[in-house]
Image (cartoon, rainbow, N blue to C red; front, side, top):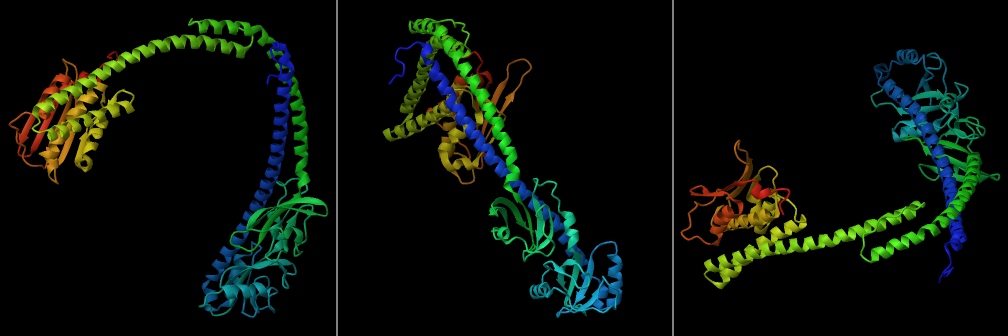
Length: 553
């Protein structure tokens, strides 16, 4: 149903304006929603990235401690039980670091501690849980954070069970002050108001920075901790009416976690500013669209009569010239109508040319089929022989036509013609060798050479190299250049490893095709050799007979 039946173009102005308003408003809403979602996703990615960065730094610190404890464990003095020299050497080696080494027995009793001089009274270690875990698993283990009796501050250990050959002590411990982990944490890359922390396996804070930072050893907020459901991820929780976003990840190979968290609202200001900017921009674009719609409606009215005139002339079969209009789109339509009228005239001429070319090619195909039928009938002894021979020859010609059709009757590579014809003979192609440079054959050459190759292959299967399991066929071609005449193309068919070749006493259609027909259609010379080593056929003809010329039809 028409909204404005038979109305002038000006009546559509209001509809154009409304049509312009709707998509703009929808577009603005969608863009704003996508931007808001994008801001939220960016905040999540940022939180997870910062947690992973913090985990990577802490993981490197723990790996360094692990490397040091393994190095200390290999000290020969420890293996020999020379604890005093081991203590002095280790204390000296670590004097410029904040690391300290402890050797303990299974019950936790310290045998030495590089925090204090050798021989100083020592008691059991403060964290027996991590020692028991390390001795049970016989693996390198990191402890939870705890308050050290000797250091009088919060520390954590990396424990390594000593080798069985060690004469004294059941585990080596390398210990570090938890306060040093805080130096790895920075809130510079976090949104304003965000915090970050390293947590041990029990959920206690090892180190923390930011507005919501907790003291070392303090239990992390369980409401956030309970939301950690996997090895790494992002969670959203609401605590005391405030929406919090956190990114967390497990330290690779350890039981600690890194977490970065903060209020979602800290990233909303940018979103609100984006909303304001896009609303103002949308209103501005809407005003431009309304004005442009008015101008377009006005110009269409002036130009439509000219377009209608062009269409009428085109309907009468005339070639029309484009008109100039002040509207680019209308101007494009005018040019398209002009081009279409010219193209239609050219298309009619092209159809006539294609019909002539189709008739010409059909006549050539019929001539080849007629010659094949006539020669095959002349040499066939029975109807069955005639049917079998003519079927194979027309099939070979059909493959050439299929090949030309697939190439849109353009030039076909010589090797492609060979392979296409040889496919008819199945497994024999495994004993075919080809060699030569790229030569593109014109359609007539493709058909004639395909017929010749089919006959040569048929003879090889019946009487030649392919009639025995060890026989092979080699096809080589080359362009021969002469100083005083045009170039020639040489094609050499050589059978190897077959029975001795015997020249036939009677010349059938196959012989006429590979010799007389080849010489006639390519204006060349064919030589054949029948010898003890096999049959050889060679064609030397002008290259122009195969590739034609650019202006040849």
